[in-house]
Length: 512
Ligand code: KIV
Ligand code: ZN
Image 1 (cartoon, protein in one colour):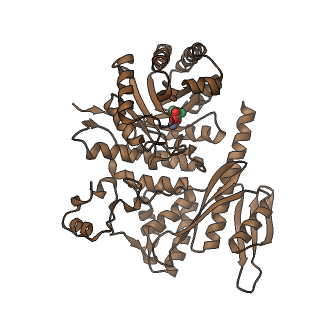
Image 2 (cartoon, helix red, strand yellow; image 1 turned 135 degrees about the vertical axis):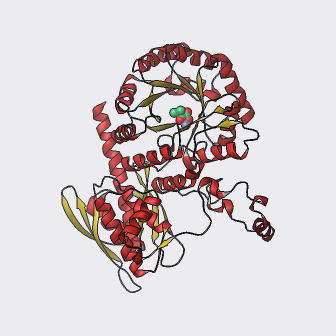
Image 3 (spheres, protein in one colour; image 1 turned 45 degrees about the horizontal axis):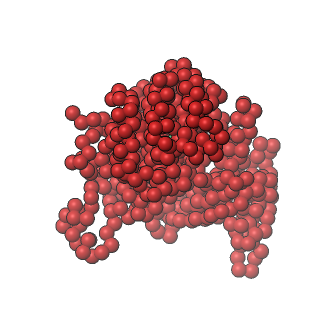
């Protein structure tokens, strides 16, 4: 019988460590529901002690998860982190605490200034403490692949003896080559025996994360940790969609089973791209726009005769369709709009539905048809809303070849509405300056991208920008038929994310 490989998704934790990304609690709970639909076995939902919003998101995901889904929080090997994780996971049917500490020479020397003996003592006592919660304990020796093999063996055996249930073999800086990683996992299996669950966690610094994850599975791992769209620190993590599809396409060489329902891959990757604000590269394997596009005439001719000539798998496998998109019009009515929202996987509250329907009708009135992409963009603008500290209530912008460009904004703030005007170097600059004047919250603009949600000059417009505050980057996204309004909404979205993080970190400082 084929071995079952479990998928742990770490998009909401390692994926959120992608520079600029900071999911709101609602975005996290929405992605978690989609991950369950996708069929992952475990959701690493965040790092409970890192911020109050992570704590809240893990708690909510733990409460909403089905009884067979494991929900996990990361924790450093510290009592306060374990306590925070246990609190956040209190309502999970299957809670898991993922405990981590750096064990390579480099980490011992530069991060901890400690000796191997002292590190072993610390692991022993802190894992025992974690195990006393009664929750499943996963132990990661961070930077495992650059850790002395004999020391790594002692570390893992110490952790298991102290009560760890799962050993996660981390290629933290994406250092390993595939044959080397397979060999390491095989070695670890020989040290720990057949009954211990082994997990693999690979980063993509050398572009080998997917290859290494597959090699780790061949070496005897039971669990593979991945993110969607390969999000993650630096060059990212192993991509769930790549690993899962490679296992299907090359089932001839990889005789394994898993619980992933591949047809949900494309929709969830699209949703995560929206919520994270990070668009997927055109040539990103599996989900990039170009994956099923053929440029050369020879390829096009052959694909028309038989797609398998140049397509490795049918796009339908991952829920991609080519053409045939449904269009709604104003005649579709409220019922048609609501049904389509449901089919596209969006859940909105009653007031949001009312507002979304008004926006849909305004668009449909002006144009003849509204596409699925535009309907999704409207719906996702509600899920992407961060708990609004600042709300853009109205704006006005004046520009022209002989006019001084100015913008006026009315911002709803905790202390009441504030009206401000500013002149600027173009209408976008003017409105950003006016918002800054009104809120008194200044950030640096690091990048600004604008594109149509769909084809056609009357398509909705999407603005994504990256703002920086105190060295941290925040992605903001705005959608509107008007580019200036989309820019202003994107700015407000990034600003509210920044405020949420700043406030959340303030709270955790007092909690500690
Ligand atoms: O890459 C890494 O080492 C990690 C750990 C927290 C597991 O993400
Ligand atoms: Zn990682």
